[in-house]
Image (cartoon, rainbow, N blue to C red):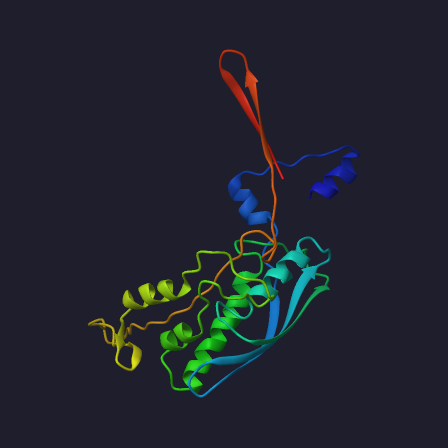
Length: 231
């Protein structure tokens, strides 16, 4: 609409959206197709992951490189895996340009990873929480891109806390999901599932990042306006 208005009126046009309009009309997440294969030992230790990740950039490459970089990092989930082979692609299509929305490629990739974890648990006849804890990243773990996670990794503690709140119990044979209380309405059933994930902060993938910020104060006796610059 903005381009058409500029062309029709032959003058610069500015559009200013409120928050609701921005959410409705701003670019949305990249549609992503993922083909992935996971291998594990009989006792549930993940040994290898291969994945092909293809993102739909739309007509222009807006944030696709960064989004697919995040997907590359997170498509193996929050797990320690020694052998990894990942190809990521972003392709141009006739669709509207894709962007990022709450996750920058991580939600799509983690959805695939956690689906694979559930399949592994089923194939190995293991509890889904138990297999996640067996492979979870910990303090000092190395990410799939070869760099260490920053200090403060608490994934095992998060898994255990969520499990305890969701009808899991730790037994002598590992974590087991207990039967949740069911509704008196026989047409409804209550189930439980568990999934995990992580989201990087910034785009350094383990390398140092730098930023700066500056503030201008405008006014005399009282501050009338504050201007923030950052990069």
